[in-house]
Structures are given as structure tokens and as C-alpha cells.
Image (cartoon, rainbow, N blue to C red; front, side):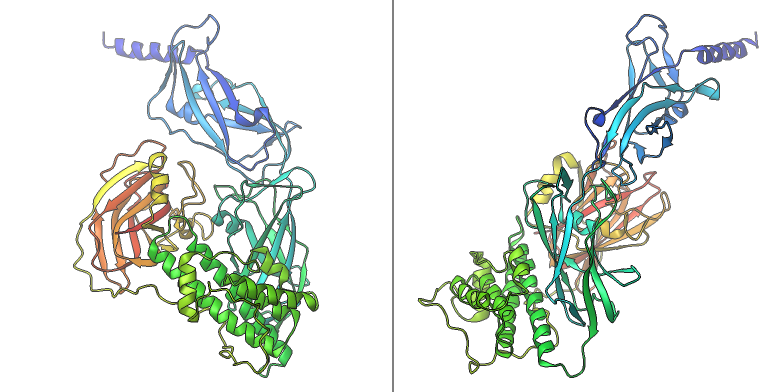
Length: 629
């Protein structure tokens, strides 16, 4: 009788090994249309009962978790060669066997990430399921054909406000134009962060060695779509700070490199597209500047101030920005334009050229003074072709436009006049005997007027005062983004990061840009999974009396064990400590929200501590919002 259990086990194993394999059914979204590699490609595999749709085998089919985990997608090219696509499983791994009744099915979801490594041409995709126990042959689905057609590339051209001479230690403005291809459409980035990731401004020497320049990209003009067709153009401006130019005196060339990026941060559609080279000579400023070089450097300072004013105006018009944010932006806008006007008048008195008049027209246009702008523009067009005209008109810097009320009020204070009171006659061109404006200083940066500075009292002793809640991105994303009292982190550092570019701490700054739960290069990821405590410190542009911290956990949420506020004077306060009590829906981006009474000190940074052993796998953070009262 003691042998009966052994016989029972042997009999059950015999049943398992004798069962028929399941049927694999593969569905690919792009099978009905060309795939350009610019977006994630969903791939769905259904495991069906062997007798699905036909009479036959009626017993249940049991698949071991390891066998289902080994299910994979095989890709072959037109020649039958197996190729590698960046395909990852999106479904959770299973701990229990999969049981397929006669009318049952089990679904496994894969996704091919956007990648420039996907070659054009016809490809066949199959699902492959290894045999159970390693014996017998693998089970294959019917092949599904996918035609890969790469998106065309835009045409790139460059111009520089400094012309062929750039002096080290002084700023410059580089304009770029992206024109649509002759046929088809090319893809454009969808967000400011994606634009920054997609464009690289470089200096190239005669050996084709390139050095990237840390230039600031002005936000692109708004567009109603994210594709560029024949006849379409997008004009951009790069602000190259004085400190961004490398000390490479001699002949160089500007070059723009464009690499389309997906929402996941990877290159899409094709490899990098580069502009034709624009020759430039980098020169060190001599101790005694000749008059023509003085005028050039002064003009560069004006350009830098104009671009700074444009950035401030964009921040002023940002939808949903808090009142304090708008006030600070308005003051920066006014301060930059007043200083630009002083410098522009000084340049005009030194060098009465068309570019000098063009800059004055741009200054007055940006101030909303249409009459003055038109007089200076007419004077500029009477002379030689202005070198700066193309740049200022690209972003409307030379086109008068109504000023937002906050900007108009700030200009009244900064200039001491009512700029809305239009003169009855066009202003005359200032004579050389007119009062000299403030002399051009060594630093072209606009003065920044602080917005209602608040003294930061000492913080109380650290205590856990917060209330924790959660929700998934489908219900909270829009509400958090629209909160006028919230702000996204502007800088970040971490105890470790998987990479200094993709997956870096900087990926946790700015608005959310991860669309689906899972491993994503646009989120901060520690250097290793399940490695104990990790810290992420986020800095915010505005110091506020805070009332909440909201963390968007884009992969494996639940690892946050402490949230600490850092004041402007270095004071700290813990608002949450312990194990996250929230229950997160599987495979869903989860928000961790901690709310607390208004802090008695202004907060400039937040430090998150994660215990990566709490939730196995990669714990990733996409964005963090600091909310004021």
C-alpha cells in the first residue's frame, strides 16, 4: 500500500507529459499598416486550448510558470535571418501554473520599444513557446508580417547672430530651422523635454571631432501636430551662455544634430540627422578691444537679454502657473528689456548700422511699443541687410504684441513711465548728444528682481506629520498637472543612478513623460535593483511654504520609506517615515501623495528615501510635484 502515492505521482506526470501543446495566436498592431519605429509597438500573444475552434482534445492543459515565462517573440528579416528588436514583456510574471480549459485562454502582452536599431524592410514576427520539460519541439504561432518604413528626416540649417566670429567669454544666439522633407512626414518631439533630448548643438573642428555645447533651447513655437510635412518649418533659438563655450580658440564650425526621441527616451525612426556645417572662428577677447569688436560684443549682450526676456515671457504665460511665479517672471522680463534698451542705445551711438537699429526695433517691439519699433525697423531696412533680423523675427521678438498685464505693470515700474501711453508722433532716432545710458558692463546677464522674498525661520524639530494617500495616473495625472499651486522639480541628484543620461536623476525633473508602467529611460532608476536604501534629492525653482509632496512612481511603486523637506536655510523636516501603507494596482503608475499643514519655513528641496528591497524589481520615479498652500 505504501507504493500507491508513488504510483499516483507517476501517473500524474504521465498525464502532464502526454498533453497536447497549446495554440499560439499572435496579434501585432502594425500588421495592417507600415511601422515607422516612432512609437511603442504592442504585441499580444494568446495561449489557447489545443482544440480551440475545433473538436478534439477536451482535457484541461496545464502550463508551468517557467514555461509561460519563457514565451518569447521571434523576429526574422526578409532573408530569414533572426534579428534583435527591443521587445520586452509587459505582463507580470506568474507564480502559479496556467490552466487552459477547453474554452479558455491566457494573454501575454509584449511591447517593442521605439528604436533607431529597427531596420527598414519586411519582417516576420512569431511567438515561440518552449516545450514543457525541455523535451520535444517548441510551439510556434503563425507568422505576422510587419513592414518597417522609416520616417523621413527634416532638413536642418543654422545661423548665428555673432556671424563668423565668436568671442570666448561672451554669449551668442544660434538659430536653427527644421524644414519638412520633400516627401512624406517626419516626426517632431512632443514636449519641451523631448525637444531638449532630441537636439545637440556642437562645435566641430577640421578633423570632424565634435564638442557638444551646453546651450539653452528656447521652447519651440506651439504646433497643432507633431509631424513635419513638405513646406512646414519649425524655427528654434539656442541661447549659448558665456560660460558654455569651450576654450577652443581657432577655426571651428557649428553643427546641429537631431535625433528624434520617443516618450521612452530612445531614438526613433532613424539615426541622427546633422545640419550642414556653419563656419565660425572662436577668438579670445583682447585686453584692448577695437571699436568694431566692442560693438559686436555689446550686440551679443543685447541678443542674450532679448532671449532672456522671451524666456521670462514664456514663463509668465505658462498655463496654471501660480501668482508668485508669474510675478517673478514679469520682473525678470522687465529687467531684461530695460537693460537691453540701455545697451542697444549705447551700441547705436557707437555704430549707427542696420543691425544696431534692428536690435533697437526688437527691444521696443518686445516692450509692446509699436510706434518706436516701426521707426527703428524702417531705419534698419534703409541700411545694409541686418544680420539679426532673421533671428529676432523667428520667435516674434521683433513683432510688437500686447503685453500681459503683469509684464506691462512691471515695465511701468522698471522704466518709470506708462508704456501704454502711445506717443502721438513716431519717436525720433536718438542723437549722439542724447544722455548716455548706463555703460555696458562685463556681464550681459539681466538683473533678476526677487519676487516677495520671504525670510526663512528656523524649522521645528523633525516630526512625522503627513497624511499619505495614493491613486493611479489615469485619475490623478490631469488634476496634479493643473494644480496652480504645484511645481515640478527643476534639478535632482541621487545616491546612485543607472546611467548619467538615460535613467539618471535628472529624468525625475520636469513634468511627467512616462506613459505606461514599466522600465523607462525617462524615469530615475537606481544603479541596482533590490539594493537597499537609495536617496533622491529634488530642488525646486520657487521657495514656498509647502503643504504636499506628490511623487509619480512609474515602475514598481511602494518603495518610499521617508519624505523629508529641506528649507532655504538648510533646515529639515520629516513629513513621512515608515512603510508605504498604500495598495497599488498591478502594472499601473502609482502616485504617492503626502499632505501636511503649511510649513513654517520656505521649502526649496525634497529628499526621498527608498528601500528598494521592499518592492522587488526596479523602483523608478518619473516626476515630483511640490505643492504650496
